Image (cartoon, rainbow, N blue to C red):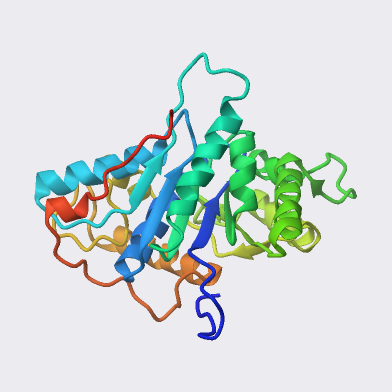
Length: 302
């Protein structure tokens, strides 16, 4: 996935879509960590925020820029483009945004190695189109039956096998459309987020359900992420577990907690196949504030 034969034409940047129809699953946190890991590995990265309401990834990146200016730290950021929406839009607005989004996306084909797209926790035509563009689709789910129900329907009768639910059906539609248009397949990965330290009956039941449904629905499982307060502490400053900084936000533990978070996230990204396991996140290269924040974020509202 990472290397392409030199005799083949360059197919353009690798598109990674982070998707789930349920909010609060950790999509934006994972997207930001993936972006920084890729940047630190020397990759050219662009990103899109398709969540017109929450804009969590956009806020994360804005916080990162502000923290870098405040601390005079050379933090790397992607070329980020949020989609902005407003109340009172007409019924065709979503399709209008699709047209603008695809136009912006086409302009990036020759300049970037990766494009990371964060999608909303709801159904929209824009999100469906983005899923159909994914070379890699990553779906985080919290370790609960409430979140699992977005992907598979678990019946109350124990002897009934789980069946694909609304998000899985939407993904199937998007990926079938992708294969029909360009003949390309999508690598769909699901990982569990906020795993408890101690194994529980709930954990084991979800493990069995995912093992049954994964080959039928067409995704593969990757190592999960533990419940760590430090992931939530990173957001206000725009930092990630991959940032090698001496100064962290007040109250943060810069030692073991950050180290364990980095190891888990690095293992997850390597299992997905976006970076090789032996490539550690490098020390950031010194950059001025001007080069760090160029090109400026854009709005695709109009």
